[in-house]
Structures are given as structure tokens and as C-alpha cells.
Image (cartoon, rainbow over all chains, first blue to last red):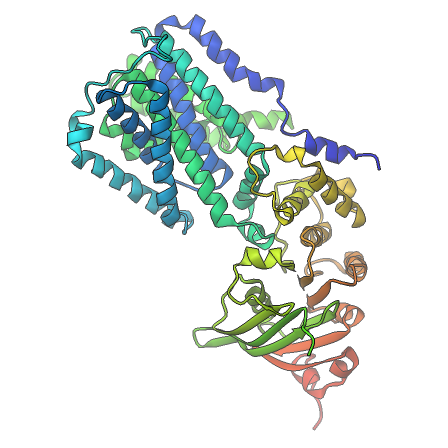
Length: 320
Length: 251
């Protein structure tokens, strides 16, 4: 039998599209075009990873969370505390942050994922608040309100020292983001990832075709927590500072806003929304230090009115 | 006594004061073509939900090919070949027809949770899904999203997805519901051509369809089995005519 056209098209869907090179070209180009903004650039890259992790649970599995900062902050504090207590090796710091965040994701997921919708949203909020309060009370290790002081991060592989201008930070964040993006892309296109889309689209049907829905949700929640942890650890290592704001509700909310601006459930929304938001925030706060939040708000309103589905969703309309 | 494909004993369920399944004893033989009928609110869909595990019974036992499945989760029952379709089409509406069926094939083959290979590399699963669509005459629509198709076609995809799970027992919940009569013929033909080793339970309102397909009929009224028997006996039963077919029988 000739393999049909439909089967071929379906089997090729995970292959790379030339457009997918665009964010990476832009990131490398930005390094040369904006040499004075590398520190900001590194923050943007690390935050893209945070938004990407949120996209996996929100955009793919349909798990609405307001507590993702718990994992981000856990990764940051683990990497930070290690570096402040004599272990400044960055790569192992990332892994340690990822592992603790994943553990927290797994354990809290066992509880919160039993529910859906608003109840789930509230429980993610509760978990994040509890983690933030724990970090506040444990000021002897976290530094509490003052933030974590005295981090000393060693050179990467013993070779690349973190410099004042952010050259190392920029490429460190870019490399880690790229590797994590590869992993996320692989997950999304795997049968597991497709089944997550199924869960988002119609959970009743997923049960009826015999999918272990609860287990799938727990797995992606744990993976996403690990990626969020890596993102937090990146920011901790490159800024050499961690504060309680890393665990705050505002952090959880802002990452969702950035993701929504870019577009949810498409793996690239983070790459558009995060730079847009963070650059806008940076510019607005310079131009108008008092009312910059107003302009951010205006940007949000425009997106919600004119670009449902985010910036990428807006461009989709012209494709059809 | 030989084992039935599906059997319930004393199956009971109530929501508060409302009893929707009252000690239902039911047998579905291997390869049966069996219909479950009853007026609105008789508990037909509840019975399907109980049997498939979407609802927990208050009391009673469910056996699949002799094995007690009363406490198994829904997914485990599907793995054992107990599959249902939905009265109101329940598909992945924004995904393509082929993907709808492929997801089901992947779950049956146990590769649905695989992380380490792209879905597109599971050629066998995709091809199986596609040949199933060909069998049902749906191959031209395979790359279109489900919500672009006419409702009658969607009903067929509902059946295609269930067949992708290699059912031993298939519960068809009003397979022709909401479909214009001009298109219901195709659905009946598809059901007639289903492999004879699948035990079929058809929950239906459409009497033409029931009498055309079923070799045995169970009538359910207010959670109770009123009567069970071959179609001609059911059609002639005065009690059935009174409560279900809405006929006033002179006494």
C-alpha cells in the first residue's frame, strides 16, 4: 500500500521549520547590536525559560496556575544558598535547583492536581504563599526580608568568569535556554505531549480512551517545575542575589501576563511575550519612572482587545 | 453457566432520593447485538457511566468476561476492552481527525505516555489510525479539524476512535442522536459491519435503528429492568407498549 499523503504530513509534523531559527538568530544578533544591555538580555533569556515552563502546564496541559513562582524561587534559593555557602559551581547549582523544584512540583502536584479550574488555581496560590512564608521564616539560611547575600559563583567549567558587563551571563543563559527549549520541544511533539493537548481539549475523552490522566498531569507539572527551577537558578547566579520577591504572587502573575502577551500553547509565545514585556518595562520606567506601570497596563489592554491569542495568535490570522 | 462478555449484578446507584439504577442485573453475551431502551430519564446513560467507571456504584458488581472490574479505574477498564461512545459527540474538536484516532491508537498500544520519540516516528500507530479511517470512508477528511465536519461525520469519528481501542465490549450511546435521518443510514451501515466478535450494547431512542440492529432488547424504566427479550417479544409486550411506546392498552 502506498503511504498516504495524510500519514506523511502527520509523521513530519515534528520536523524543524526554518522560522524556528528566528528567535535564536535574534538572540545572537542582540548580543552584537545591544552590547550595553547584556545584563538585561540575560534576564530576558532566563525569564523566557520561566514563561516556557509555564506554557507547558498552562498552554499544553490546561493547568491554570498562579503559583509557578514557588518553583522559580525554589530553584533560585537552592542555587543561591549553595553559592553563598561555598559551592559556587554554576552547572551543578542549576541541577540542584531543578531537582528541588521538581521535588516540590511532584509533592505539591500530588495534592493540587486532584482538582481542576478555580479550586486548582487557589491551591497553587496557597502552595506558593506557604513556600514564600517558609523562606521568610527561615531567614537564617535565606536572609529573609534582606535577601540572600554573599553569593560567589565560580567560573563556568572553571574557564568563563562572570564579568561585570554580562558577556558570560548572556551566553550562559542563552545556552541553557536553548537546551531546555530543545527538551520542551521534544516533549511537546512526543506522544506524551500530544496526549497533554488531548487532556486540555477534552479530558472526558482522554479518560474514555484509557489515558492515565492524573499521572500525565503530574509528570508535566514536575517537568515544568524543574524548568522553572532552572530559570530561577539562572537568574540567581547571574545577578548574584535572591530575594523573597522571587517567590511572590506578583512573579507568578507577571509570567502569565508575559506568556499571554506572546501567545499561550505554542511554545514560542514565551519568546515573543517576555522580551516585549521586559523591554517595554525597561523603556517605560526610564521614560516615565512614576507612571510606567500605566503604560504596561495599556499594552495589556491593547493585546486583550486586538490580539486575543497574543501576538503570535494575531499573526496567525494572516496565515489563513 | 458460561461467562458473559459483560455482566452486572445488583448494580445500584442513587443521587440523594433519586434512584437511577435499582439492582440492575444485566448480561451482555459475547458477540451480542443488544439494545438498551427506555424513556427519558430511565437511567440508560447512567448505566453506561457506571459500567465504564465514570461513576461509582452504590452497590453491586460489574464483571467483564468473568473478571470483577467494579473497583477498577476507567483507564484500566478501557485497557481490558470495555469501550464507550458518547451520546453527545465528545472529541478533540480542534485537532485533526487523524490525530483524534491516533491518540486512541497510541493509548491502546501503551505508547501514549512516551517521551523519548516524536509522535511522528510511531508510523505503525499513524498508519493503523489512517486505515481505520479508510474503512469508515473518512480518509478524505483525515487532516481536517473535527469541528469543520458535519455532525454526521463527527458521529462516525466517535465510532472510529472507539474502534481504535480494539474493543471487546462496545457501548454505543445513541450513535445516531442529532443526526438528520438522511445521514443516519451510513451510521447504521457502519454499525452493521462491525466485527462480529465485538459485543455491542446500543443505547438508543430511535426504534427503527433498534429493531434493525438488535437481536436482544432490554427495557429500562426508572432504574429498573422492566423486561428483556428478543425484539418481537418486546414489541408485543403490553407493559412496554404502555410505559415506553406511549400506547394506551385497553384492559
